[in-house]
Length: 459
Ligand code: PXG
Image 1: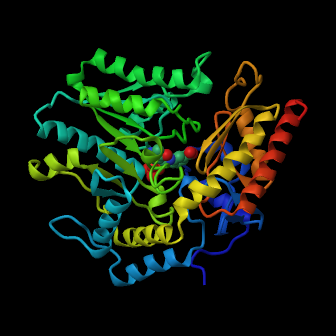
Image 2: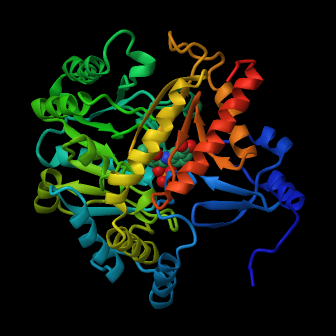
Image 3: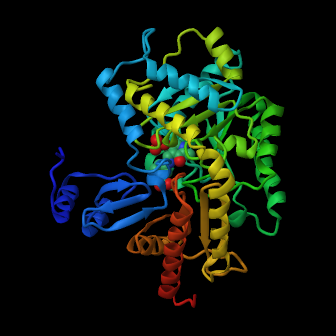
């Protein structure tokens, strides 16, 4: 029997309206509309409290990589809860799931990563990154290296530190951010900023902004550079092929630590275990969350590369940092089951060889749609940038309204897609079938056509 009572949708909406402040939401306007209540899910489908079915093109929030309703994942967590529902890793203790997961993570991450620090989320992981970076430079005797360089449109989370790393100015304005010693350079967003340059030329130029910034600040003051391999919540910004190799070169040249935020790209999303492998990023630290448990339970962490782990462990003494839920046993047990299932079922290879290329091929068909300026993607990530004028890549004014219209049509048509400004985003579960991708394509096409019709543009 369900512990949560069954109610009519309107009743839930009323309680929600009275008591619930949602994340990233205008509560007043949600209150007027009424919240959409999702009650159950199976595979790649969701159902709401009125029984309407949706195909989930966003894997929840870019996390439910193995889809919903996996008994093996649920059982792993339940069994662990029965055996040991909670214990911590402070004060020289640990428990089997956290230890086993650490070993597994060292196996599936790039070779320089042999150590993990657990957190409860991606935001906490990026806060931890800042603590690790500062600690590292203190230990190795360069305490002036304090500044971390991030990028416009980056999303690294919602705590004070993670939101400071983020590059979304309205967020900074609301939160009186960033905290000191965090600066930003431009994003490798060719469509929006590349002008007449080729993508490859623009990739070099965007990377060189980092070099210019390091030289202006003084390399002796620069601690690290952080970037998502692909900027997800910032609008599916896929860097040109030239970008990351140039970032590697610059970080190496000035001794700056390189941090890959793998919260979205990690665990198979790009067709490799980590986005760093897909783009050849030589990272010293890697934050992760989301896909490590397919979102079934909250878990995040930082993979600590040898360059940082060596001094931290050998010379650092006690690291005054940790969370009550660092390495929660149920979440770790579930993550072990999740990674084992990914290996057993060949999920990453399937995204690389079959599903990713299929999604990209189908999504490119949208490029000829009159509303579409660019289709870009990698693996099971894709974005459709909507435009007023295909030739000039002109944005709609005000930015974001057309994306919201299209997003609402998607919901109406039974497809979950996310709009970032006027870019429609899809990040389907890694266990989707070809037929699921086809269903998403049909509904996305219908939603684009309805959006065009509303704007008076012939589709
Ligand atoms: N880094 C990246 C790259 C992310 O995408 C975080 C860190 C923070 O993780 P937590 O677990 O603290 O949320 C994220 C989270 C969206 C959306 O609307 C994206 C995220 C979270 C919520 C909404 O696209 N990404």
